[in-house]
Amino acid sequence: MAFIHSPSRLCLGLLIWKDMSDQNQQNKSVIWDFWQRLNYADPDQFTDLFKTVAHPDINWNGSQPLNQIIGIDGVVDQVWRPLRAAFPDLKRQTDIFFGGMSGGEEWVTGRGYLVGTFVNDWLGIPATGRKAHIRFGQFYVMRDGKIAESYLIFDMLDLIRQAGFQLLPPARGAEGGKVIASMTGDGVIFTEQDPLETRKTAQLVRQMGRGLRRYNRDRDGGDLRSMSGGDQWHHRFHWYGPCGIGSSYTLEEFEDFHQRPWLEGFGDRNPNFTGGRILGIGDDTILAEGNYAALGIWDTPYSRHNGTYMGVPPTGKVMTLRDFDWYRRDGNYLVQNWVPIDLVDLFLQMGVDLFDRLQVQIENGKK
Image (cartoon, rainbow, N blue to C red):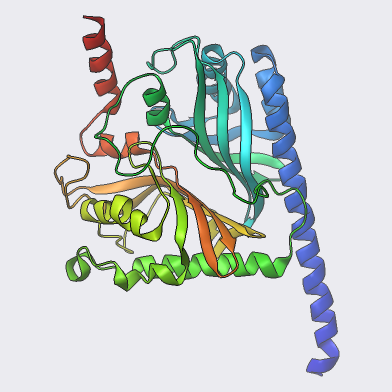
């Protein structure tokens, strides 16, 4: 009997997969069209444009100092109109874009740059009159074909660096210029991908994540071998961190420039911490499509601040984190990883207001 029924179950499974794939393609089409229209819409058209793609009570979340905004009017008035006033010719350049199902939700995600001429101050950051590149990373939750939730990280410190101010110690990793896009040029995914390749990518990222959780601060200290990073990371993989941390171009650089300093400051990774929003990962399912995968956390308790980080002594407080990851797989290894982190929010929790530092530098520069 099992043999008789298995073709029916197989057909049903294929139909479900096909429906999910079709919905994913539709969701991506909605977001991609929205992004292109937003590039050329006048500010007085923003509200109507958002109404075509988002639920009226959209739960919008941005990096510090934007934070949570509920409803279309707030998003338009507090984010997009001020942003376009500061950068009148702002255009989006996207190099990673895909979607899928995760944790019972429909997701679309992307990263890249917003590029425009910085002609008016924005969020207290002085205008330069020059072209600026604002690094962005974003996740959307889609429901009934419209945006229900949005999570967006701008690399504020990189924009501030372009304006001529440095708020943190010099980065250990490489900084300056634009972060490298996908080396294979296929990070913007419009078409249906091989489900087997998608599963391979998700499985590799899942294995990597499990390795990270094997690290124990008290036991391992600066010894990272428990995480077995070399099993999933290519030895010459590229890790692109936010301004203040910088980029690494080998596994050894990644460990020296980011991983050890980070674990010294935030080494708990306590699985008992609960709360916040898990992005692109749920029910042990990584958000993946083809050779690309993504995940993230938002205002999620992460670790105690139990060691000095970038000169800030330990506070002992539980830190929440806003952190995204996009991965590219090549064969059996992860070869590129883009990682925006809301460092402004993290430092604020440690008692350091980086925007206050900016204002002090601005005032000192005026004297």
